[in-house]
Image (cartoon, rainbow, N blue to C red; front, side, top):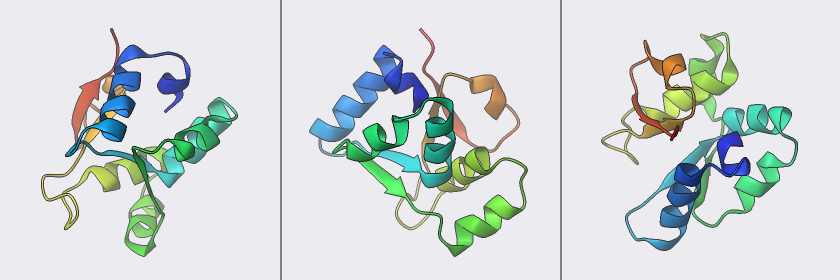
Length: 113
């Protein structure tokens, strides 16, 4: 999310596609949104206002998953990336820090050039 505010071309393309192409979805875990806003104030409002972004609330199942981890942002994002009824194939974590996801059970899209 912070990468999108820093002019990352790949992040911008994902946002554009999610807002303009059928079948493209972009999700933002609420806890990751909070952390992004702490890193770069204004990010949360910007991301939340984008038409192609679906915010994922911290509901009871995700809160229980977050409670078992040390960082809320990564835990909520990892939980959101797992297969679910809404996302049977799970989701891909788009990040500029792919090494942080190395030992986690998620698919990763490296947003670095």
